[in-house]
Image: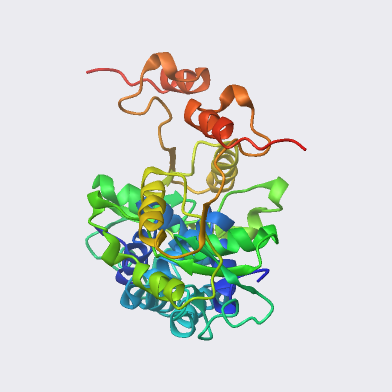
Length: 200
Length: 200
């Protein structure tokens, strides 16, 4: 018995393809799926299949959805004069949880990354330009991550969108709430000082 | 949008049930499954379903198998006078990889654990006793883990099996190969000294 029985070996191989799952974790999960209630394992299989069958991409904002346009794009209550640009569909969820933003979104599906061969054509930038040039917008909020790639993407979009008469803003960089100044890196502190707001 | 679209939320919920997978990992895996090739995601779903449908428990040793009795139990080449007792089916794989043991196995499906309410009746001990009392055995190797629970289980089995005229052995406890004596705990060192073998 050099390896496990074929159906188990196949399950371990498929699980190993998931992000953050190595051989040991895949084995543990596979044995868990075999030992747990059969209903649980089959529910997971069904959830994967259904998610792949039902979930589509919104043709306007590129977010994931079961209806096109998505719930946010088709919501008449949302502020249609603002678009918040994010990297990935799950970033929308993080912003929505704040309850602070009522505008629309645009998902780029990644960041510019010359090293990984991701240029402007690999991102959903043309759709964003089409939305901006069709008019009616007042503000574009660039909410890509404050990483090298996210900042480069924000910078690139600023250059591209500068020609349109709209406000372009970038989410604030600074100390996260609850952080200790002692443990913050100097770049973050510098950004926090640069971005300081007058106390009124 | 308080939460994700229902099919995605369901997928995240099912993934969260897996061992070692929290909300964040479940989200990451779910988005990976949505973004990756549809074939990959459906292959995982099929692997889970097939594993549950095809894999059964060997009626002799309790290992997982697609045929009953399992490949090891039905292999005429194996030494049928020895049974190695392990906690879980995947322990068999670890021992088989050494290539050193050619006997049979018996899976207990766990360890004695009064705290978790696992007594002798919850383990597959009666099947082991039936195999021992049917005769033809020379040795039982207790290969439960050297944890409190594994050791208690080994001790319990020793008491139960003492009445049969067979050798009962316990896998050696000592320093793992490659370990530094400086970093080993005193219980392991004590076991290594107790279990010392004469150099011939």
